[in-house]
Image (cartoon, rainbow over all chains, first blue to last red; front, side, top):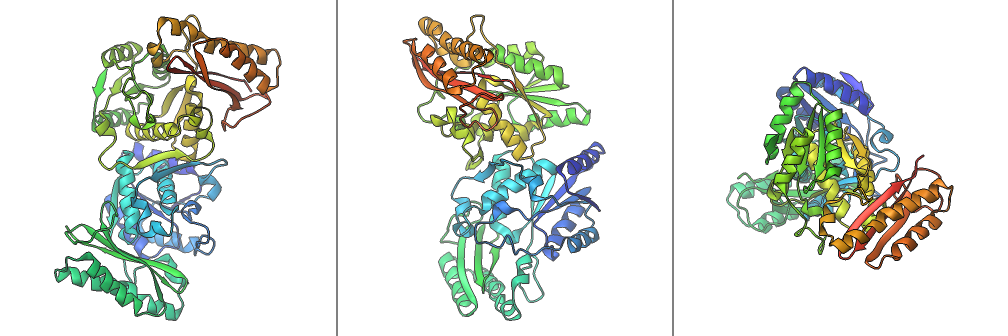
Length: 282
Length: 282
């Protein structure tokens, strides 16, 4: 696997591939990779001739007081995992390579969409995500890009951005990968103490409860959300940021289940903020 | 010359060209083309294997009360001129093709740069410009794009955007094209009555005066601006929006001439807002 640290290196390699008529898949990541990322890379390797992963802890998507400084890193392990998955190139730039002096241009979905759910407590988060993903798209010019459904709001916003700006890239959403006991894989799980790790199971248990209610025909979104909240509130180490039912495309609140909704949550376990969700088919 | 009205048509044609190893130049326009646009197209034809011009009156760069509705149009004449200049394809989409239902994503330089000069009275203008130019870049994927130096602030902002978002497109700035008597070519010159047309010469006369002062060694930017203002104020049909000296890269005000400055103006002649400028070498 080739390791590129500059934009120029990535462009040169991708140009060579494109001249050979090869298709390119991109998996953007912030590093500290786990099986969730691995599943994205494997899907890209299946669907595209060549796969590029980016490992870049993007400062513009972190707000003041968030965990930019403490976010875990292990580039050596990341490279081992990417190689194992069949990734062809990893792009691992310095912050200065991505954000030149005087940087001021942002890509932003300027609607209610990025202000819902995680946007309520993370007001600049999705602006940072859209900006860095746009840059990665411009650098790698992939045919397809792969994102996890665990970050469901991010996935919906990126789909909106790609449509709005005519980016000509196919966005592939991939299923949430979970630990054996149900906890959704996340780089932030490493923050959890043993006790918190157990408590963190309330998120996936709430997802299961919500899915069961939907399966049993519950059409009242508020009833589902309230049942999930009640379950989470039984866990003393858990503090709910939000549990919400929204339209799967617009991220706007819904009160009725008709298919296509997203039921999403963010919950603090101790000081660690975790997210989980499920989508209603339709 | 091929006329494309859909994004899909443009992509298909450009893909074919790229498979043949041909380079592509883009000239974005709002139509009602004049010799200024012609010079951009001719430059692209010289520098690139294939040239695409867009003719799209972009609503997102017009504010309330501006001249979106009255902006002149003559697509037949535009096509004749583009054909004559050697343009290979014109992209002439409907608004609905460019702005799908629920459109909400903008590309925006979020610094003082777009708030200076024209941005003081046109607060959303450059957000609209950056957004539509980004879309055109994504649709056409040109190697180079050509912009006139008459819109000097636009050119500087687009250069900033391309650098910040790693767009990988070379931006070529082309000189202002003027009528024989000095008036900078503009689609909006058509708004002028015969009397106003004469009065409009104050802009290019002010440019000449400013250039002469610089040539004579004047280093005080305010003195240059004040002399230009005094000249314009002698014209009863003229009303100054701004005459300003700014840094050529950041668009921030300067008080001293050291090379690299932009001296720019916007002046109402009757109800018609015209712009002109010159750059100080260095």
